[in-house]
Length: 220
Figure 1: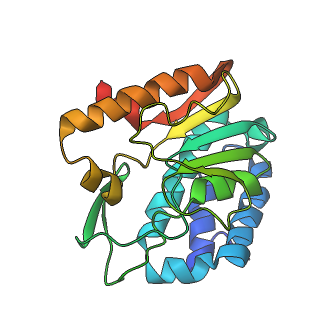
Figure 2: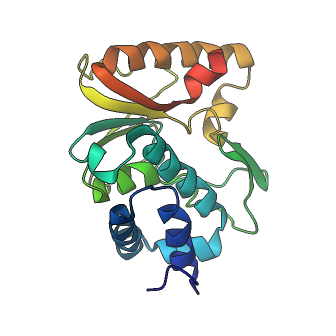
């Protein structure tokens, strides 16, 4: 595998991801992680079908690098991903979707989409962390710890214990076509954001970190 002049989509993704990490010792682990995602989830085929998947995965890796610095810094850490995505995501009606990473063209894909699969939790698990994903979609076949919940319902995360996570992120809920259809009014979304921020403060350990919070950004 060549990282200097990659000649396929999977190697190009690996080459883009290794540049977000400062320590060269992390590069091989990143490459192995992406290859593992390909083996288990046919990532290469999905990249060919939906180029926007790269624009989903790359910022996720960047946020991890900025939050932890080294891959080994979050090994065995318990990390909550709120609105992690699902394995049965449907394509929205519009050919474009406004995600937290910017507007993405969905191309000619129809029906099912890989854009909203739980890539962050999958990547964390492959890198040695302990991810917990919550989402309203189907996560039945995922091997990381997961729960199906309605994030628009106040108190829906109350079953999770106080101060039980080393890190938390929410970065996909407010750009989700399903969520925006359920809560079309800005005031409604603000109420959901307030509940998520409250839960994040409750669930995070005293020395824990927020990797990213769209809910906080929406409120500010």
